[in-house]
Structures are given as C-alpha cells and as structure tokens.
Image (cartoon, rainbow, N blue to C red; front, top):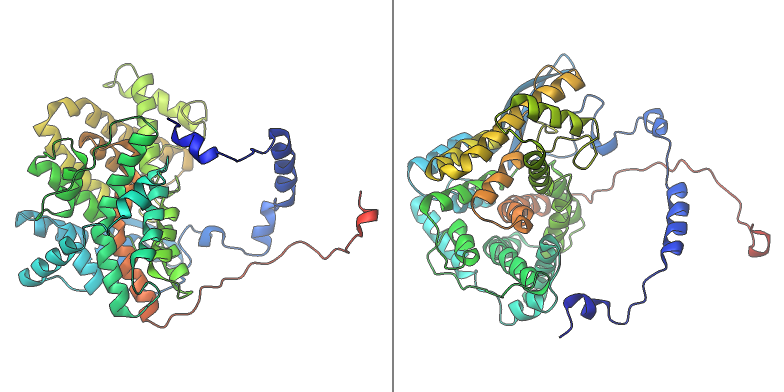
Length: 463
C-alpha cells in the first residue's frame, strides 16, 4: 500500500535544487529594503510606535489588554490585566470555579452576546453548542480522512473552509447568520482539531486509527478529553485545567495578529469561513500561537543539557548560551518570556501556573519539571532584564505555561496550537460580528514604494 507522501507526490516533478537556489538569490536581492529607510519615512513596522506600544487602528468593546500606562508620553509598566467585555479575567475565573462549573461555554456566551448569561441562558447556549457538534454526513471521510495533513493547524483551517460547502447560506453576512455560523464553529472546532490529529497519527505516524464519538452532555473540555483519551477517561481536575486553558485563550483584544486578521479579512465582507480560516493560519506562526510549541522544544533542550535541575547556576549557564545564540535554535531567544503588551506580569500565565500546581499536588511525578519551569522563568526573566536594560524582569507569558499544562494532560505536541485556536474561536467570531455590524470600512493601509522608476528594456537588449 502506498503511503500518503507517495499519493500526494504522484505525478509531480520537483524543481531542481540548483534552480531554486538561483531563484532564491534573485528574490533575496529584489526584496531587500535598507532598514534605515523605515526610520526615514517614519514607517511604524509591525504597527508599533517607537516606544513599543501598538498603533491605534480600531475600537472594540470585546476585550482589553492592559500592561502599561502612558504618563507624559512615557510608557510606564503596570501589572497585567485582561478584560472580557469589561470584566476582569481573574473575577470571571474565580466566579465559575468557586461555583463548581466549567467556564468556557459561559465565556463564549459573554464574548458573543456581550453579557454574562443567566442560568437559563447558559443552559440554552450549552444545548445549542451540543446540538451542533455532530459533523455533517461525509465530512469526516472527505474533509478529514480524505486528505490528511502533516500539520494539524493546516488541517484545522481546511476543515473550516470545507464547512463552507456544507452551509446552505455560506455568504450571508447578516448578524443573525454569522452568529449561527459562529456557534457552529465554536462547537465543532474541538472535533476538527482532535480528528485532524488522529488522521495525522494514522497516515503519517503509522498509528492505529481511533476516532471516538463523545458522550452527550459534556463540556467542551470534557468533549476534547473524551475524544482524545483511548478509553475516554479523565479526572475532574484534568477537565477543569483544560477548560481554564480554553477560557484564558478565548480573547486577547483586537490587536493580536490573528484577531486583527479576522478584522482585516472580515472588512472585505467575505464569508465567515474564509475569515476564520485566515485567523487560524495566522495563529499557526511560531511568533504567535505556535510559540507554546517553541517553549516545549526549548524546555526539552534545557532538560537534556542541564544535569542538575535544582542548580540555579547550571540553568543560568545554559540560558546564557541560548541568549548568546550558542544553544537550542541559535536565535538568541528565551521563548515564553516577555510580551508585546504585558511588561510586569501576564495574568493568564499566573492563573494557569497556579491551577497547574494543583495537578502537580495530585501527580507528584510532575513536580521536578514544574519547578524547573519556574526556575527557568525566574532566571530567564532576570537575564533578559539585564541584557535589555529594562526596569522589570520579563514575565512569563501564557505560552510558557500552556505547553507544560498540555504535556501534563497527555495532549500530543501537535495539538498545542490547535487547542489555542479552539479557545480563541469565540473571540475571533465576536470580532467578526463587531466588524460587519459596525461602522466598517475595508482595511487598506498605505505602503510607500521606494523603488524609483526604470525604463523598459526590450528582450534583445537585456543582459
């Protein structure tokens, strides 16, 4: 039987390496711009102001990320805050945890509808989500198993695009229809992600194919664990920890790359599936949602090169080698530390770390690695503070802790970023609703061409 690579490559003639290298040299020369030109033309690269703050490009009522204040034109770092529809994330988490319920469905309702649900509204919404979980007839066979992917985020985006085909009104961008589509996506994203991983495991890793059908009445976090675990078993604490990850990933303001992508693509008035697929592919990047995977790889390197995990000196020595571009991926980055907005602390990271400590108490075998993560965050933050000459140690961000939490839950590495996407779908959909329902204009910033005019040269005279 042919493997998946032979099927995909059948009939395709690869380009010669010499040709690719020659073309790459041409492309590199043609697309290089002198960095000084950006300062000369006052271009705010990455839509960042010179002080590192984001350029204000829009307004939102959905989420707010607070990491600093501006006092007399100077950025002053403050303890990080995250607000969903004006509510502090710490208060939201404390509320549903103290009352002993899962929080993701409540947060999804809050983001989409704008207010905290009553008990009756939450139950109605939970049943609405559950009703949309079954995949359309033939979807699993055609859209998931029919063309598996070596990357689950790529598979996730393609499942979203395939959903267009199964929708009777895919291009209707009325608020009512987009809300219907949004509820369907929030409901089915977990299944897309887990089934996408299982298809990869079967076709690319030669594992037996097991695709469970989850029991009814489960929360989103329980649904994921039920689909993922061989026997569908999990503890209440494990489900609570995964639920918390989803809640903390659900929204992060309009300025993060994938949410801005949602606004940008939605401003063209394209369909919901195109906009959310674009957001998925934005999140895939290692500078964005893929960062938790880089943290996991970096920490695997720390574990293998530091002989005594309890030694601050040994951990510091290896982190210095990473910063000096002599170890790990030689990029000089300690992944999972620092954030574009949070300067003192990332509330998501602190909440997740504290909840993870409860799982460590239940499973002491995780304690050495958990403590190594804490040590790496503390020492790495201080080293970066010294090298950058900044006021505060760089804080650990949510990516630093989410990878460890997923590992503790036995979640495959390939699902780290897809689970980020599962959590973020309500936020993306809320921002799409805000874009199409408000005073929207198509996003069209300016780019200045710094290449002067040239004369066309006839073919016979070209050298």
